[in-house]
Length: 220
Image 1 (tube, one colour):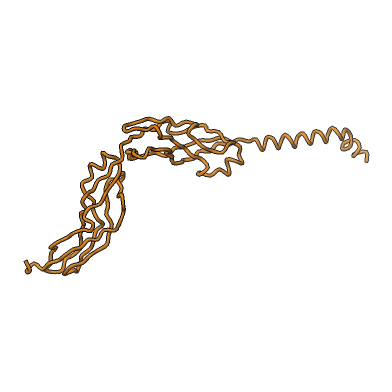
Image 2: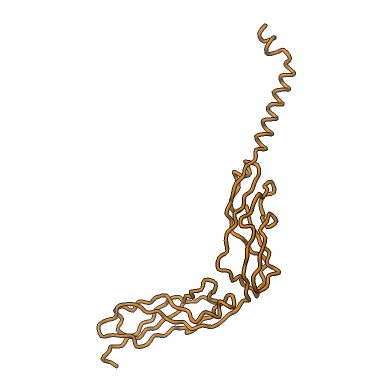
């Protein structure tokens, strides 16, 4: 009992207060611990004019370094962070955009430390459409004595769209290969058209019917 009175119960109130203060200090420090994480996220473009196309072939992703409470950082997902560029005032030609914390959207208790790259240059061009010829691609081992007499596609032309300068350079669309091995008469194949330029798309994608007519060389 003397031990309890001397070492435990003596100044008991002060000891309780000290213990409570120590626990409160630990809680504040542990919950206020900060952490830093880097995320690679795509750059999103908003409000692009309807008659304008991005003609830059390569658009880099953004690396965003953020700082905040450890618990928030631990639960942070890549989709929680967005880098947005407003294109409502964009016009044909080149334009440089600054990438700062003003373009980053993230949870309120996090802070942006750095965005890489710090700038992004884009090229713009007016949207254009054009009709181009469909050229069938035929492959295969022909039957002995046979050769291709006629090849035609239905539809014979398709409409492509994209940045004007790129669309104007497209001469034709090519079909996926159709294999006529062993065919000795008329055969029709269903396939797809392909445009080599990645910035040019088919305005109305649809199957292409390729008809191949084989003819025996003696029949000529």
